[in-house]
Image (cartoon, rainbow, N blue to C red; front, top):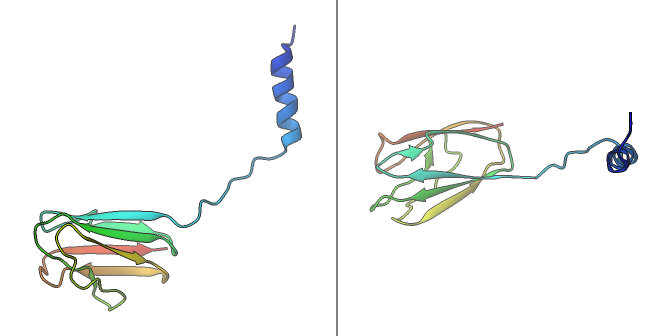
Length: 109
């Protein structure tokens, strides 16, 4: 059997490189869209340290208000957004104070 020089060099190079290490990308950013008097997605699971941005695409204001008091965006005007960095782990159901039928849940792991 004849070994090709390039394949041999690649194999040798991988052996010298050692084990592959994964790099932690750090905190992530997630987006929740507010449209048609709904949060999308309605349920979001993230890691502590991640950021969530709620973007209001409706023609009227909304809020993102945790039922337990953990966070409150106050009024988010039409076409605007609100950002929240999650530091505490847990399940956080939230509603729009202006439209209580709008509901969502933020799960922070």
